[in-house]
Length: 247
Ligand code: NAP
Image (cartoon, rainbow, N blue to C red; front, side):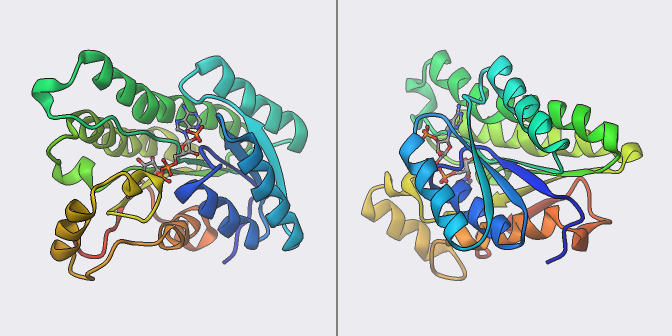
């Protein structure tokens, strides 16, 4: 895949989908900045793996819900590399509960982790990419933001917000040639879905036309396409990668 840019920041890249996105993008020759919040050792191991395979990687610690930390992380990258070509806002959490049992704190924690952090990333990217009139951002949203899910009113609101916000950033940034897109994964095999009970997983699988959960690499490939030169006329798009569960 062809990339005119040189580097990328992947948030929440210490495990799961973010880890795979980092590895995939490194395999295409990008220098990957692996962001982590608590998994320092995991981030180091991913960096080593990328370098062993001949790729370029660096590590950047930041809690992306903290505006100062996230902004400083982007500044550090631009100071080091002279630019930020691409950003993947991947970090996210769940705090599932039926709405009647959900506290306002459970609600706002998820909004802050998934939506506000993505806003900060999109805004800071616009500032630094705007100077070069080049860049592409992919936000990792969710099928739940499109179809809703019981027990996930907070998560659905955060991801529905990411989808709407991605379209708005796309419209604001297009005059500077910066693209914003989102990927909405269905159910993907990671720690996040490992938390689900086996019977719940089996029930979901029954409803997925491709009859299985997705792999992190299947999300990473879609992200790579949306960042790359091959999607140069695509912006404001919400790309479903869900095995046909929601079409
Ligand atoms: P995961 O395995 O739980 O990993 C989440 C990653 O995000 C971890 O590296 C975590 O770091 C990081 N993170 C969370 N909050 C952070 C913060 N404030 N600052 C920095 N990093 C933070 O989750 P995943 O399944 O890979 O999910 C990745 C993204 O895909 C999320 O946005 C999720 O909503 C979305 N998604 C996942 C699925 C799925 O089925 N797995 C489906 C749809 C969408 P720590 O180790 O420090 O916690």
